[in-house]
Image (cartoon, rainbow over all chains, first blue to last red; front, side, top):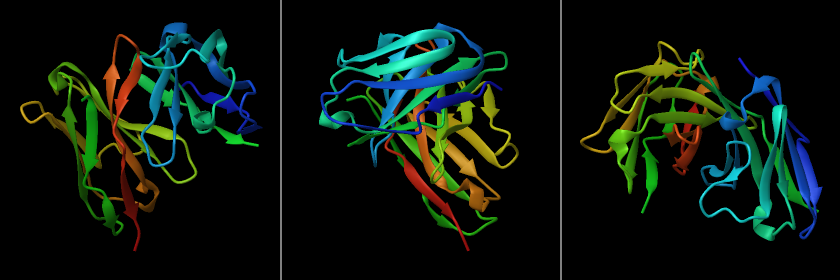
Amino acid sequence: EIVLTQSPGTLSLSPGERATLSCRASQSVSRTYLAWYQQKPGQGPRLLIYGASTRATGIPDRFSGSGSGTDFTLTISGLEPEDFALYYCQQYHRPPPTITFGQGTRLEMK
Amino acid sequence: QVQLEEVGGGVVQPGGSLRLSCSASGFIFSAYGMHWIRRAPGKGLECVAFIWFDGSDKYYAESVKGRFTISRDNSKHTLYLQMNSLRPEDTAVYYCAKWDGDLAAFDIWGQGTMVTVSS
């Protein structure tokens, strides 16, 4: 099973700053099969990025994804107050079809 | 409006059972595979069960295999999770989510329903 390790566990930043979140895989992951999600308290996760770098419908362009192989990054340029939340990366691999998530990075307001 | 809504969570004793339901609207439910995903307190997200768009194939996490059963009724646009022999470690918020194979991602999630297994 591919294990995804996210870092840092918690990131403390101020509005307007840039956030860089890392997701490292235990073995190579196809860019096609790497996604990022945002989750706020009391809500289900929201898809931000799929295919490592494609923004989902309605996602602002301050969110960007990059990376390949075992190292992927979610960057949020110019943090807005509503961006402070929990972020997960996710990979898909087959056969057999397996989906795993990283343990999450909490982005908190400084 | 595209949405998923879970119901059926609650407090149950170890060894007990619960049945979760997830109602879908705003998309062609019968065309997509569906998952149940959980988030235990202080932990990350875990896929627990997946069902093919037509119910023809199902997959389970090892942690729930033999205890949980996923099913769907496409005529009612509803996904189910029958949970038997519940354990304290099954305590979590359970989400249903739509899998988009073209995106290789979950593009629609419910708000979740809390399951607490405690004596």
